[in-house]
Image (tube, rainbow, N blue to C red; front, side, top):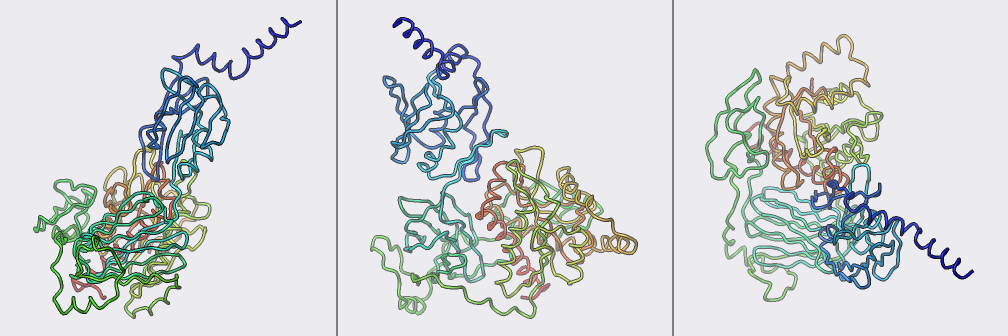
Length: 599
């Protein structure tokens, strides 16, 4: 009887599910296969991960996970486990079992981990375990269909924004909760630290003649921001506002900056000939000559000044202000800092480190305020492009437009009309009519792109042309124009009128539209952190017939995993809105300087 019991026990142990899987694994070592995983970390592509498949199940390599998380592995072969150490915490993986210990908390995985050829493979649910999420302080998701692993840092600072004026730069740091802060001087820079702040490491390339860049990271229990100057400030002042909660840092320039100067950007070959210009911002400070573009098509040539090579930036700090001015500034109360942190005392800091206050009422609009029509593309039954994770273009477009409206509403120089304020379907012709009937000064349509090639990423901006500037521009126009299948075709006089307006806009507004495009495109590289694919032309129905300069913005590619992840963040949406807002402001500054517009 005892022998029978022993045999039965041995049978059940031998043929238990974990041992069967282990036996299968050991008998088919060569059958493990791998594919490249699509990994997005805080909106950025990471290329060092694979998805491994064995017996129909998906696994990740523990070694690759350690590299991704910047962790250290310690092998303990006697006890049959691997310790992964990160953020001063240990995660113990007992290989060939389902057991994992997250910082002392015992958990079971869906499948046993596998030791094979000196590598441990863990099932994908290891990465999505909430305990690992807590340890890494990130939100981790895995979408099996597209083999898409997404890691998003848990932060409580949602956006860093900046706006340039001739005599000052305003930096807005938007907080998810109220925090205390300190602000100190350092060599050629300013350091702002938020206690209990968390933010993913990144930077903004400003280069506006006063500030070079704004970098930020989390150090211990603080989020630390460093503002690096091009020129010494005249004065730095702060205020804390709510709705949303944010810290506003105003840096008064000691030397005015010219916001009317365009930068050098890529223009389509149908408009400008000659050597191809890089798709991103080019520093044109070393070239002072305007090259007249050669006209290669029936389209009017673009004024070469819109890609002027005279965009001078202040690369050397300006001299100190005169003694009287410095004496006056020295009377202003400054925040106390240790002696070794003070590198110069030529400017003062007025730090309003009190409670968060309501924002002042917007200033009364100027009589000469420009009227803008902002168009959130798609809506209602027309979802537009849809990302691999289900993000709908219509929702992103509306979110960006509402942010834009908030910016322009606070600016006394602009009035705004929206073609839609909610998830409503508006025919393309009706969007144009709204602009024309209200005699708008500008029409800006907000969209996001898609492509069968998922690796394509980046920002584009379009103005109208009967002929597309390239094959991809033509494909984008087809995609955006496909909504006409949901519309009733214009009838009779309305159709004739639209065709007449089409010929008018080609002749009258193309140069202004291209100039507006250049100013907006120049704002994107330092803010969006995606490729700037330049200015293009195509026959977009929504732009046809507009009786004013009109552009169509394609913020990013929803079909790209990284772009889709970025588009779902307030950080990216606000950066896109800021790029358009700043571009419009600088476009009008240019017109005002040339005597073609009013301040």
